[in-house]
Image 1 (cartoon, rainbow, N blue to C red):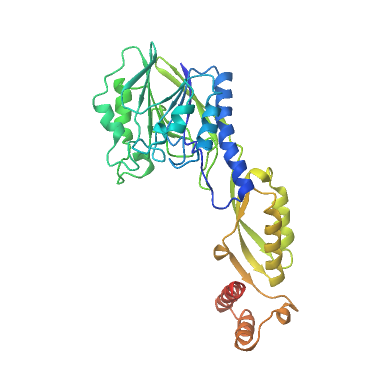
Image 2 (image 1 turned 90 degrees about the horizontal axis):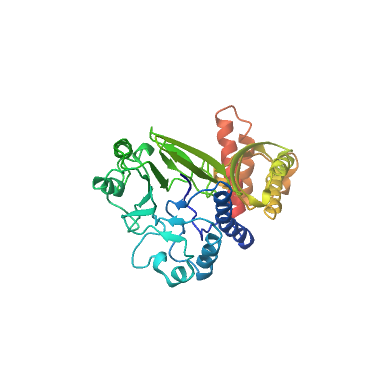
Length: 374
């Protein structure tokens, strides 16, 4: 038996750092990821696709967004099983009971909206463990395993969503206890646990039968291995899990070392070397000693390259910069009176012995940032 395990599509996701054009491209990529999943299912001759939670980002989506996602699912040539997760749980306002969803849902797309065993064909079962609220207070996987009978010749896949005890979150409510899952696998209650919630592809536990597929398109900087799906082969007594990359977007974070007089050119060279800028979200901060004109050059370069990147983020308060005016720059700064005296005093202090000199340089950098905000 071969199937596709994916999760965390989060259709309708918004990001604060996108302008309208980048947000539209980001949304289109998430829809197109569904089509790529369908293509892999066709090429690999998979029997079905399971989506282990967070198919949608929220219940509060425009009807157009829901219908476009379902139109993409219609192109998947095998049955698709959707599990409600913490972003799109079951409940009175569930997106899975909305007119938009029910009216456009393809016939081969099924929602795992109860805990019962679903027989796909002879010898093949799925057990879904859907979220029934935004927060869970119990380990619903463990609860389901309590009365789940062993299989008798069938392959059984369980689909769930949430953090596990292996992720150092034992004290949180609703954590999935991996030790109980491993024992259930040994007893023959299931053959594979398809998980969602963690956006990085992860092999959990010791059996090789408990996996997070990860998000098919990355969503943040801390995801170490996103942009994948899993192709799972189950045979009697054996399992093979193959990771396939399908993502098109990239989150990239860098602390860039810069020098006085060359900061702008160093930044421009760094930005020029990054590939696929239209699908790259960059968070960049700086470390070093630069002049005021260097600072202005950094600002103007970032503003210029914003037009070609998906987004460029910068948090100046996290910079490790000392801003020391170069020769001739001090006279050009529009300060007078007490403000000028304080600025000149800080400049003189930057040549003090360490550690006082560094303290003056840090104070000068802070002074300059505050001056820009006034």
